[in-house]
Length: 444
Image (cartoon, rainbow, N blue to C red; front, side):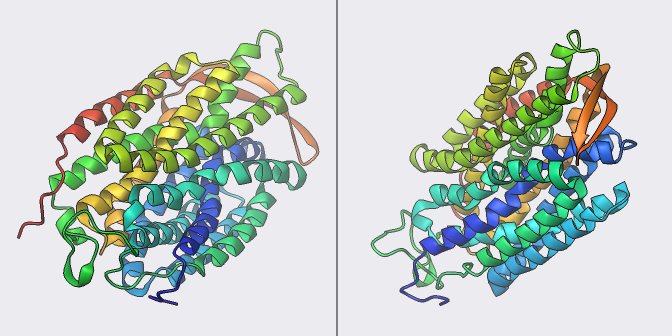
């Protein structure tokens, strides 16, 4: 099938979506937090954030290595390796009885699995669709953004029926199977492939290749252009992760503080309603995250990557600065969905931007290097919210898990400091994007 003229390139997109919708369940981590807190009451808020921070860091690290390997041997077996690592990581997490083991399984092994599989659909799709680079980059990662829509209600239902730890086991099995199936669609096009009837806008390279300039990763990281784009990618992803990985917690604080006068102890039914709305917000973010990847990618094909980034950073920055005042559920939904929409756009536009500025020959490893901005943002974004949160009041509440009612105290707090930092970072990135100049050709 490799290089065959009759191969339908849209099958690559089908495989990409199957892989990404499973990997994208990483964004539902905030759904697990209440159950993990009930299971491990001695874990602090920063303890709870640690696995989500490390899963994103090792996700980013794995894309560099996996991208380089898949550039050399092809994407199929690399994606299959990712399925194995992800399944093993969640299996270990399900049997963990300590923060160390859970973080090792979910955060480190799971993160390596996600990163190993993630880079394959992106690099493969961009090579097959040079004529629709922005749109196809968005489609290639849309499933990742929409994974929460599919799996947030599944995870919530499993937590209530079998408990939070068994939920990781069942999801690990599901993800392993789906990613393995999607990996079978991952093949590279023939060398120098161009879609029939399409003429490249730039001069073609050797053997009809559809790129004018191809940087190695070593050449790419020596350019100031790469580092300016890397910093802006970091800023946009940090804002997104701040919200996505803390959605349920932020909503709990907003909601519980508004109810504390009415309920000195939040009843279990009321608390369950709060969690249900938090899960709804996670699902809504997932929808906008997925749509943002497709729509912003398509917009960037029409008005240019830089103009698209201006709009996204402005939109995201303004919403982050206003978020502390969007405390009713409808306004909260609008705010977090807006951030998710822009976050998805960053994930859709930057792969195409990397291909535009540095070529497609080494797309796997080159985007892996660029994607480390996402990984580092995964350390910073989820951490900054609980770290800078100012506890306003510890509110007693009742919760129900696996049929057992338990009580605790929820440290409801104020997140305004982290919102301001993320908003300013996004607005400052508009200036950095303006500084970046497109390449005129590789020198040397």
